[in-house]
Length: 368
Image (cartoon, rainbow, N blue to C red; front, side, top):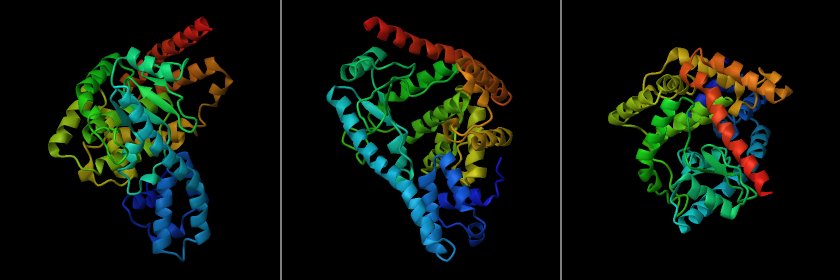
């Protein structure tokens, strides 16, 4: 694990606070190492904001060529961000014209919380659509026939330049009990999300409320953490969400919810990352940090990178499907030391999810 006092993390904390890193941090910075770190954690745009601040404050220590190299690295991401913004508006209008209410999850709605929205790397579009599974899949298949169905979403290849996932469920958990409770939570709060219009993004675009996001993003982070790994990009999203401010009553409601949903320990670990690694002021935290779980989670973050793409510990999985399955089971047991319930249920949840993939392939062959 990186020391919390390394130049890279000191630089990142200063950037998130909207100020230049100190002269000492800049002088000791290895810019090549910073680039590798930013790419691994999918936060190149965020780090570039810090580079510009340092250039303004200490131009003698940050060469113009260095700024230009970062600008070049972010330009393609900036153009993609603009494309995704347009697609979000088009997609929401498409569903609205068909009488289906929708809500954009993560992505562009969260970007608006950033000091510079373009600093958040835009990925695919996750859109939650109101209605039962059949209604949603029938609509998607009417536009893009033969699309494979997943457990909680269906791919919607309607655009060539942006991937789209249409969700019947915002996210899921491995534990059957906690997943049932989570889906009930989503159902009881969905009307407010489908009515929370965000005119900055478009006439028909809705995004989640902050209170809903506090639970949804946590469950999303938790799912990706157990499935493949997770990087700092998702934690920075959460950082800016909490910076919006939550009342004492909202914090109390959050604590009750995460305890009921089986996410209390993971939530405490996230709070530790936000405070100790990213430097979020303690008054913004939704609950007390869990030091032990937080340190464990930090080790995983710095090993795996964004969605586990840089994890080099389990190269055995490259030897085929069986090797991948055995490696995943081994990793689940390692994670069970800290988060037993979700980790031990994950292999069974994965089998359930595979059922949908097998069903889709069977249906596709049948139609052929």
